Length: 365
Ligand SMILES: *Cc1c(COP(=O)(O)O)cnc(C)c1O
Image (tube, rainbow, N blue to C red; front, side):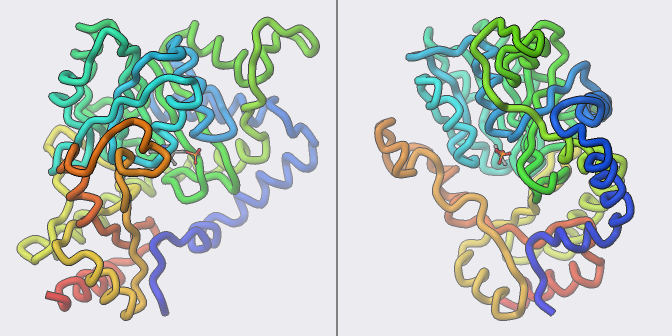
């Protein structure tokens, strides 16, 4: 039987009665837009992040867009982020007419390098977007300190990091704002598109609520130009049912990762490096190999699906040719793009599967 990278059917099979009941509840009460399902989920997800507010949205991309608007990022401003991320991180900057200023990664953690962030600060910098890539929090203390010194905002891209911890603090509770995605394959995934903003700031949360729903105060009274970015009640009900399992799923992901790492230590591939003050949630389990493409083919021939996150860094993407970067500008990210390989990772993966996958990886050497 082939082993997929992610198995959403196994998850549904394990919690089917709860999911089906949540869907039936919403269809039964026909309260499809905002309402109790959404506010209950928001309350519970904020508590999960150990933050004050959660504002449910229709995607992680919408969360990034609103976060930048809430930080007053405008045409011609600069926002610093990593070149080694999913394109949505930078797109959100571009759609506002601001400039994504890309920086290289720390080669060990794949996360943006705080020293590179500091060097990239200019008088036009308005915000920094650290991405907690693969579910491992970025080095937040130095980033928050740089932001404090230069009076710029910090927006966490926590789309891959639901429940991850940095020095005991949860992803989403450290920046001015944090953006979560509930894309189906994320650690907490909806059955369609969904996302959220999380913040400890009362004013930012109130403004986010206005912006996501047409600037509406009352049904037909609109205070500001807003968007149709609401979290769907059906998705909120599904997410609420899944949220009760998320801590246990993340514990299982860590156990799987630890087992992979134990089996792959002293092999030819490089397992992930985790600093002692960080507790990741392994949205992705990333190894590196000098012969990545051949290893990928070798595993595929044995029925093991793998992924590449991400094959082209943002500074080399056709869409960002206009930013004027060149090959060689960010060598650590370029090397990661050539060497990274994501192994199957989902809570329902058994120890036997992990053993089989690790054996297959080692058999390639
Ligand atoms: C998934 C993801 C997003 C976008 O989220 P959507 O819900 O798909 O819009 C943004 N940033 C990162 C790092 C992601 O992994």
